[in-house]
Amino acid sequence: MKAKLMVLLLLVAALLFITACGEGVIGEQRAPEDETEREPFVRQGLDTAFNMVGLLRVDTNGICTGTLIAPSVVLTAYHCRGTTVTFQAPGMSRPYKVVAGYGSRASDWAVLKLEADVASGKPLPLATVRPRVNTKHFILGYGSNGDAAAATRQRGGYVRYTGRELVNSSGATFDEYRADSTQEYGPWPPGYTPPPARSTVACPGDSGGPVVAYTRVNGRYQWAIFGALSTGDGQGSDDHARCRDMENTYYAPMADHHTTIGKLRDVLQGIKL
Figure 1 (tube, rainbow, N blue to C red):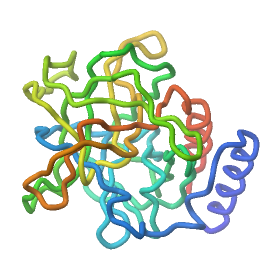
Figure 2: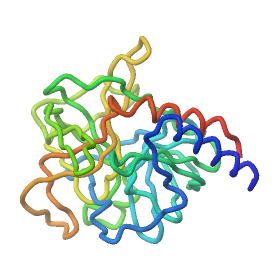
Figure 3: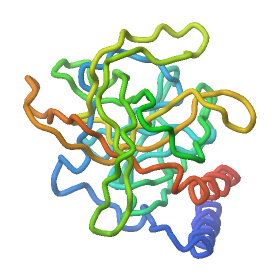
Figure 4: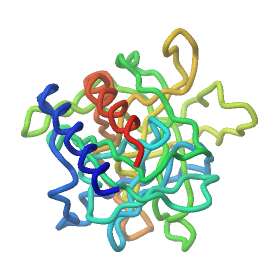
């Protein structure tokens, strides 16, 4: 196992050198000094059951969200890294340990290698272009809304792509989505009952979670990931003390990063531990 892990680390290090964009997650992991570093949850969203979107438990009490993009590879936010991380999605009988991870600190995305393939979840593809302005999307995540069961509950709701961007101090760009309850979104997976249209924002809990849409990928329509949640802004307060009301949320755009993330995904998935 140790020898295989060393091969994995060397292969991914070589890939990162070739693409010249990544930073290692394993090797400099830490818990955020400020818990709000990995805040964001879907507030006022209703329960969902996308079996490729799972709960990431980070160290002792950190919570983030991740999405399967290959049977043993998860996409999340870079700031969700930690010394000990596990992933568990709906339908999984147990959590899977994260054994390695790589990503971009500046652009706040990371891909994580799990200890084994997940059989119960169907990985989602990455979108390769930005959506049209004002199109409706669906966000997913885990977090607490003040009840004891919240940390095991996946929630989802509606947002609108505004076409605006946030540029951080490193020059990285993040796409802006705004809470929107004007209409329902679809089509939905077979047998899935969507929540009613209602305003949904992200606050403590969702970091790394996906914004998805039903779109054409590789010649056919399917759900695809347009971004991974990094942060948000807004005004007001929530009845749950740890929740920050975010009118706008900002996602690392797959339109900018799908090539690098796809290469990392393929290398990590190809290594069997």
